[in-house]
Image (cartoon, rainbow, N blue to C red; front, side, top):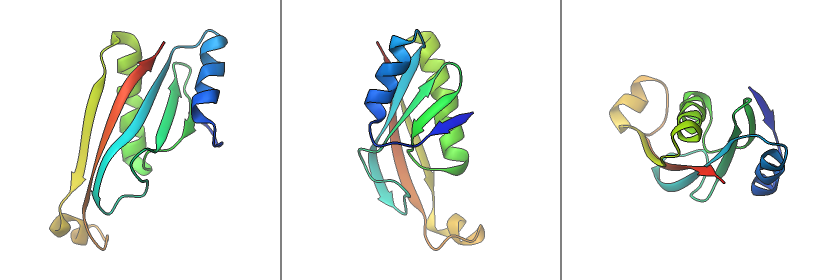
Length: 108
């Protein structure tokens, strides 16, 4: 997947749609505890695998991109819920746990 960095994520997504691409937008709608991106952060995903923006990082970003591709195909929005307990976070080397909810919708 190719990532494009820029502040105008919706503008980039609109350009992709204008070029004939299917696109989904993922938006962080809620966070609790440790979260790399605040509520309101967005990630645009194209059917060809282009990305613009960020909702988290690491494996969560990949899971959101996969869900975005499902949403592009089905048209059905999704609310994704990710989290790690404080106890589990400590086991994997993080200072504290956190939760993140991401809403994914197809851009028309």
